[in-house]
Length: 341
Image (cartoon, rainbow, N blue to C red; front, side, top):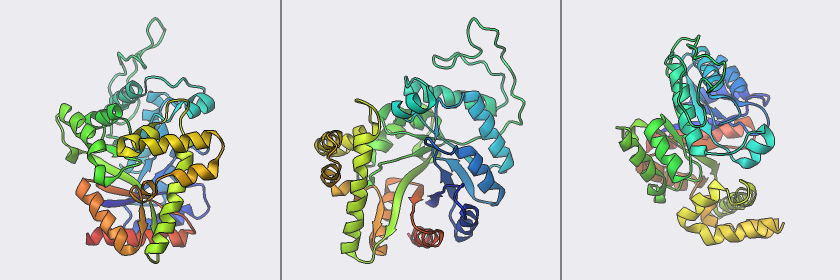
């Protein structure tokens, strides 16, 4: 098991944070891409100032770039970082894709499949001819030409942020890694079962993938403090439940329902829609805050880490807050716990 962390490269002090994280044993730094700064530019800056730290996107939104451009950008970072880049991709949702990018949100699983196929073709240096449903290349009945990539071939590890069973199975079949939001180790089979089935279809096993679990990391002073912190993280899920997605499409709510919280999630969504935000937050089950994160005393965190390891998670992606110094102290604790487990 390894430790990763999230970073916003544009924040003053991020490079020094990355260098110190590398020195204490953090294996990878990941950068999100929402509707602000892009992820790739900042990661190039981080990679230029570190030597062993892996850098990854968490995640690039599919449809925001053509698959060929995404492949070219990934290969640029892979060459500049000397093999340390990890391409994390995800389909996002209609609110972002249609509102921010002006791209129709349709066929998310097929889009993921074809994007991976095209990225791999470009990374292998093959002439780009792809008989796809979403991305037929060259475009039929067009003046397009099947071009050979003007790049040095290199492997680009592809990680997929997936929650739904079909996309989980696709991840197992094609990807190098999984970015698993809302993961509960006690119910690992709900997520890892479909991944394993997909891996089997591709002639692989779960051991062939890097299984990454993003977790908020907070060290509490005692159990009462741990409960307060857990409650705060549960409250935070009210936004995820009520505002993420569009209409009937909310991948997180679907995942929470499969975890057994369907009734509670429906109530939170109802309260949020009615703009009763405080009530919505209070209605989120405490377990969603505690079971999907590492929030507790050091001993409690060590017990949770053991559960993640038992479930098969290979990378814990820590989400920390506070000053850079405070975040590094938290990461040092997690690195030590993982090393001792």
